[in-house]
Length: 126
Image (tube, one colour):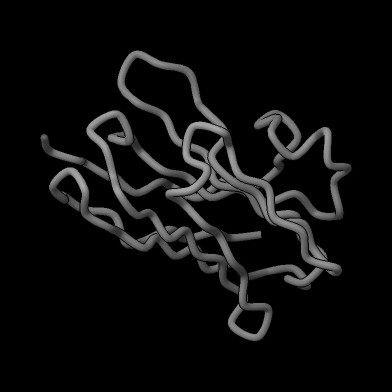
């Protein structure tokens, strides 16, 4: 699976960004897709995940109420809508894929995702 994330940039606190991740190489609807982020000096952190058919979404508590995620199986893509951004959201954001439907307890574990995109930088200024 090849993944390409895009949509990062520089935004002021309180602003919004929408990240996209395009996938190719596998039947997309069966993939579990994840969003993770890593800030300088910190460990990679779970942000959101979407399991395949039937679709379920999972959002980290740290961004719940501000971030939403969705998938478009026709376009082989997932999206991360980020609203009310805070300086602490500054990080490199990655999309990841697991070739199958993960159990709910596993979606937050970066170690179970086999494929990773290159990441896109999100910088939130105060």
